Image (cartoon, rainbow, N blue to C red; front, side, top):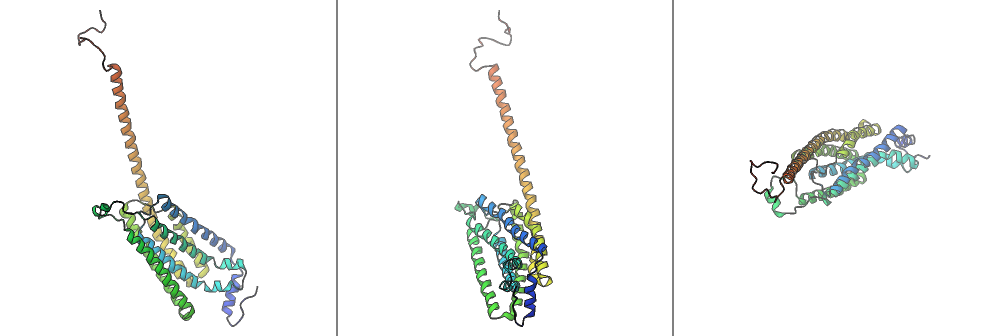
Length: 314
């Protein structure tokens, strides 16, 4: 396979390394790519099935989407050499070398779908007087949801424009820009879960937040970080460090969500038992009344019988 010629031996060596992918890391990377998609599907389904995004913090969506955008741009820049080598290596080798980009891109796409569903199924106010009488409600307004969507779109445009600028006009500062994106993504990811933790704590239930998604993603974040570390090394800390942070915070949110879900199920069971007991009491009272009616039928003629009247007539 022809490798790029010229006076860039390091680039040629890098492309040559991609021709011998490690099959263990390749298998793990493919499983992670599929796992990322599968992990987000329960969240998409829960919002659609409930036809409501109630319980999901708009700031959680905002920070998650902007963090994902910065992480995706960071990964594209750091993997620029891998993508450049695709012109000189086989399709399979290019696929293996680009899996890191595909993983981050898949995550960004799946979270963008959550953003779209969050806005589409955002609960509207049906009664104008509700907001006036319930001022302490933690539920945000639909205007806030639209503001989140517009901000995310503008952030994508700005990040894309600046990345193209550094790539074309300031290539000497490209690594600095990539590190800046990585730091931005890490900071946003670090605070992403705090609004959701607060929202879930106030609501005391998970709402449209998917527990199965978090059950898959929490351990998956650490596995993904390990995969990126194996691919990028210590120099790629700005890429794999994000997932170490998010995995820890998502684990905290998962623990809280499971706690409230178990509490809610316990309360539902108690309400059901109380309902069954009430029905049993009512049925028992109705049975006693029926027994009295059978013993002393309504309208029966007892004549002049008194307590001294013999049970057997003469």
